[in-house]
Image (cartoon, rainbow, N blue to C red; front, side, top):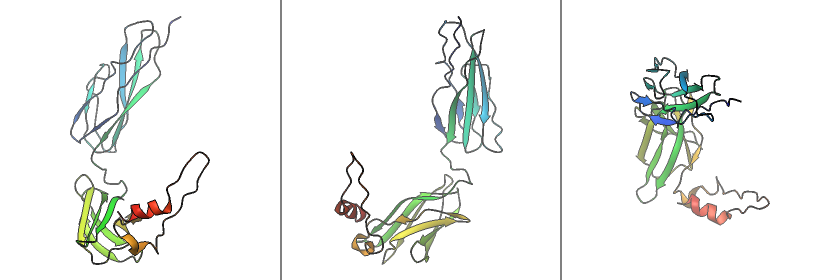
Length: 213
């Protein structure tokens, strides 16, 4: 009885816009050692992308990443008698698409230099507003790079306990500001997580120590 071949579309990839991607189906195999034919297709690609495969019947076709976002290629192999189940591989870009959300990756206040630093990612080249998440008062603005990354620094005599960032209609989560020490414990006291069977939890003292870092 003939066994169905197995398609292997290779590993996921992260690339830059403009890169030529080489897909690799060479790990596909057939238990009966029958020669395989390959059929690739791009089943998902970003809006406005014109990407096409160089040769859908080749074991290693290529395509050019012309728009930021995610691409999914599908591979089906045939051993001359039957098709394999589809296998897929994802290719995504470093660049953040314009319509993706916004978030804070780090917020810290240096008490010795009274400098507040806020970094994160948002829409590429967008103006990002830094907001005191408690009072709602504006702190400053920064422009994101063409990859969506932003880093804001300003002298702030008294640090906010938490910040959020906005760009247009996009609003991030509220992020606690590290380095505030005892200043914010009354507004944001550390919570003791519930212990479950077979698990251990950090003490409130450890959580307080982390908050002050």
